[in-house]
Image 1 (cartoon, rainbow, N blue to C red):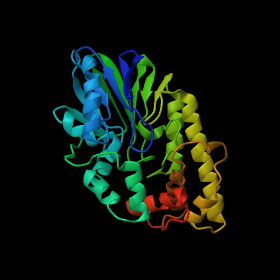
Image 2: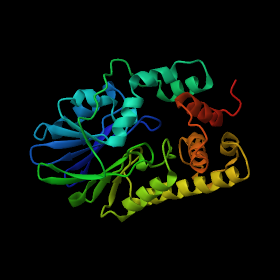
Image 3: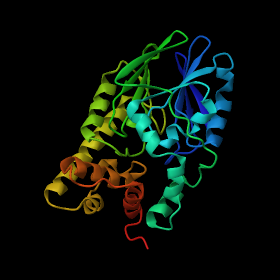
Length: 308
């Protein structure tokens, strides 16, 4: 079942009951008389459940600020339940939020196509009805420092990487970092934006932080070993995709051809289709970007190579 776990130093993590697409983590950093919430969730039902679970902590330290680590809906669609607070994100994250909101998620799942069916399979358990986008009312570039009831919290924008803006939330005195989707623990990362070199640089930055506890965007609380695994995966995919690009192999054929080796056990392995296309676009900037249905269609073809 979903749970709130203390991490020490006023840091906590909320983890969902299930793993998979859209089942994201959130965090709470408590100081004297106030708290910072790291991310909201994919729909209002889940976000209300999380806020109820956090209530014993926030009764004496109310949430006065929210940080959205990036612009994917599973990290901000619940913002409207905290619209009375300061909502903070990087400029790149805000741009992503304005492009893909709950309406666009509904449109992605609607068609009776391989991409629509795949989207319904992975997102059908969420309820996007009634969500009114509550965008950040404070943005930043680079790095900024918050004072949460006497607790220092560093926000570091390392994007574009996973998305156009990706924020690390570092709590130095607790030796804890909330990574958003720069780290997936137990599942494959998905490179919506890139370039991959920016993401590996973000991993290097994480590895250099004075932090022992790593709270990923998805999966169990972990250590820097998970950061190294993500870095290794990204480097491997880039190497494999680049070799096939040089050989003239189309991107989707390359995604079907690549064998993941030691990374094959990571969940959501179909994300490879998106990652290979991102590498191809890095190597050939003239290659057109794919829209959401096209990207999900490519992932669907890896789950079921001959849909029909």
